[in-house]
Image (spheres, rainbow, N blue to C red):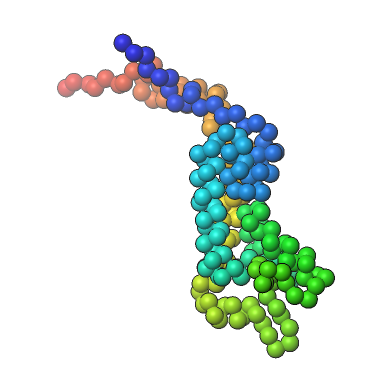
Length: 190
């Protein structure tokens, strides 16, 4: 007769390697920290889901949903969320730094802050031209950044599993509730 495999809770063993390096990699490129730790399936899942959400939002707003600007606290908070996605937000930082010393943006204005000069409000033009599509693009990129922040915590701390002592306490409580030591409770014939 074949032996049955040990319970799943005893089989779970995750080697996290260096959690700080995994967290940094997870921030730089979604899923990279998990792949570094050998959790390839989870890393690829995060990479596909987070980056597809990010790039879908960017496409919805025709590349204008992500930009770094210090004009308002609301915009700083929006970009802070988007920056959670890591390297995909880097062009916005490059544009912001470049525009401090140059009058025109790089890359045809990709991820550049809107122009606000006398008689022209480019942000209003984007909102008018794209309607709700612009707002949805901003929302999708924010959600992607926030999701990646959760993935970064997972890369740093690993999967949330109870400590061995908690498992033993839960098993004892379960045994006390059933009135046996792992056997199924017997029905009372009447």
